[in-house]
Length: 605
Ligand code: ARG
Picture (tube, rainbow, N blue to C red):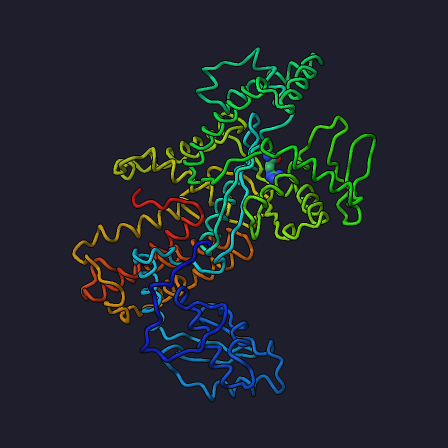
């Protein structure tokens, strides 16, 4: 009884030539599917016994100037390519879907009928954005994951240690994936798996007696705990007794001693509360805050027992380990000599408990590539234990961020990153005094754009790439940056304010969209039509960069149209209205792409 998407409020109009259905496509959410089907049909009609479905798989986006391309050799048909191409072209009749087909070497190039394209795409975007009755997820969404549930774990910082850039990347990429899976019809459960257990808490417990302050804790738990941790670590360097003390504390915690646990519980609560505020600032949320401390010792013990029964465990000097050399994954220690649990064992236990609780169809861990081996090891252990669901675990990894610091020094807290982004952005905005004075709430706007800059820089390239953190570059209004995207959205949003005489604008189906004949307008339209494909591709690759690239391409196309495809000053009111509808659709789709990236699109700046 998992939620189901209702039917889309958009239907392909019946005055168009009818097309066959192709499994895996959904023209009611992605109009370009129809054009691809029409192309596939054209080719299949000319090249029997090829089927529409077979050809459909080979309809690709064309290069600049062409809409779609089919590479004929892929069908491995007998006969010369030129003759095959000729057969298709001879049989082809221009229609309301396809305007023309041309042949170049091994390729057939197709051009979609512009009037149909414009009308359907604008209409579809409008229906999926403004039909509130059907409660549809917005344009770009699909139903691929209908009835399926995914657990996504991301961010997962360590309490009492610093929140480093690696955690920030996990947060940003994870939030994107959660939005993406939701947009693809999956039920998503998002988890924050805190590093809230381990010997460092023994250290803090003993240090708290000496350095702790209730007041400082209430004010900023994350900061205060790290301060204590640093101080008590320094003490431990000098005096070995400190570590013994800490070990004794942690032992009491592991044994469930209420008194030892009481403080720890409060630290955890207060840290989470503080984190929640910061995540909210970042437009990120979690369904559940869990953590290493929540993994039940029982689960871990019975997992170890099972591994032992299966003969997978070998002993090494009192420690227990699983030999994974056969899989080139080394030897994974699952229990230390002193019997305390470790990171790996907690992950094994956590996965088992999560499956029991959520019965997920898939579980994704967004964790730095530095932990590739760790994840591969515990995935393998779970597979060896015979859990079918272990094959549905996926590690989404990412590279390093180099050189993130603030002007005051090294970054250790998430709120430092947010504040620095806001203040660098604020200075940037002040350089243009007139504009700056016109902004209603400059602080807030600066923070929002600053965060956008950080996120876009983070998601602009393939996840696995390392990148250099550069405040100036990411917070510039020029070049492919977050501020540039926000600016593009704001500019589109201003159209309604600047042209009130054209409002209220009827739905695109009531407008003369056939007046949108400029190549710049067509380019925007086609890009808008391709957005649902960008979403599907991102689901396959788990790469946010495809959506970022889409947002830049769209913004560039809009800025190229701005001078020629004018609204204000256009005498023909019908034309002006059609153009306005185009720009508003562009605003809606750019907004959808930004939201998918967890960014809040601004209306004004
Ligand atoms: N807290 C860990 C760290 O900061 C990351 C946790 C990753 N998730 C996991 N299930 N191991 O390194």
